[in-house]
Length: 125
Image (tube, rainbow, N blue to C red; front, side, top):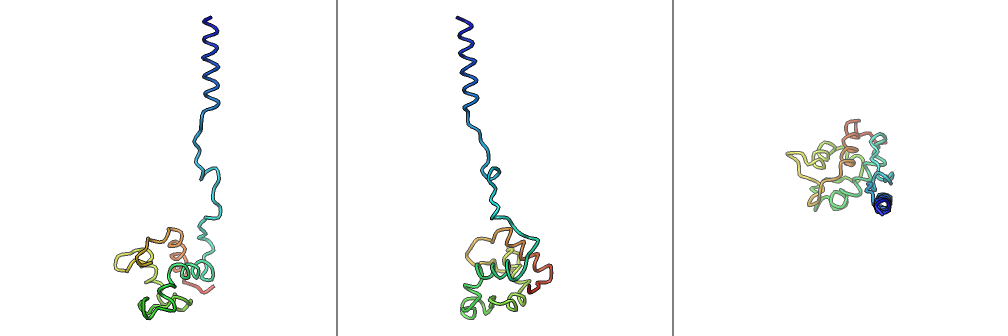
């Protein structure tokens, strides 16, 4: 009787152990490879022009004279002329107006890409 009781407890414990939940992080099991930050191949023609188009050109584009402080960032020449100012603004540095205006700070990847492009001379490639 005592042996049967111990055997039942042992079987119950083993079944509980085998059927218990585990907590793995989804990000580790299924990494999002589409959301990688490429800081090795930063080019104006890809990363920087896309950043400007997505976050800046609504105000600093066709309507630049009326709402964008007369700063037009639709072209390479326009971005290159304001490269230091743009970086100060998107990095929320002291002395610069945080941009995009009335929005949260760009993610670290986009800021790093702009900084890398700027530090490499802001080439038009």
